[in-house]
Length: 181
Image 1 (spheres, helix red, strand yellow):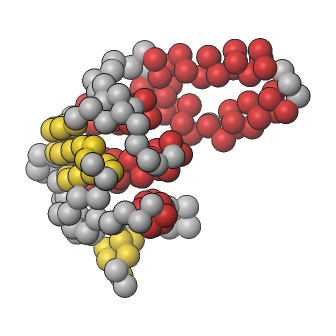
Image 2 (image 1 turned 60 degrees about the vertical axis):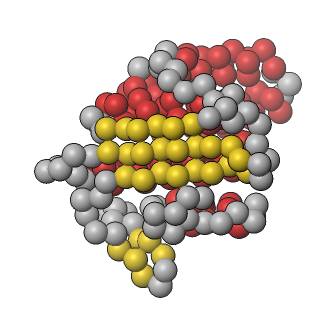
Image 3 (image 1 turned 180 degrees about the vertical axis):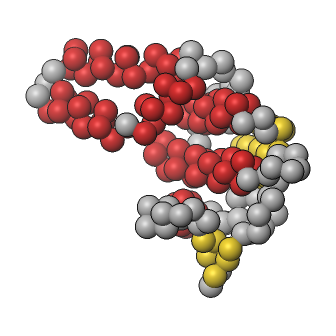
């Protein structure tokens, strides 16, 4: 199931093209059937988080499956979140990028315990994300920007820029080391 989800994520652009084509030709039944087939592996993953926000729940549950598979210790705190004043697309980009970066950092911990602490809380004026993780490799920072350590630098290293762009769009405070968003 996890492998199927990894393949699904990798091929998402192509799946979206097919769905768009069905929709533009008003082949709604075919589009619905195609979407149902895409969702099957996702629905097989156990649901751990029930925050009242489907996007947050789907992302957290998917990333928890990866964290578990990588034998990373996790501590998760969340309250009832429900609807928030951020688009689903932006919420997905922020939360997914932050968790992907945390997972990637933990995967580099060979000789020490890897861990991720996740805290998501709805407060009066918004949503607070705090994601902390173990680091076994020094971060590369130039001119206030975190740089990717991946080999293919042309295709990587924009995740945090995307997060900061979205946070500015909502007049949110981007995190600095050890601060909540």
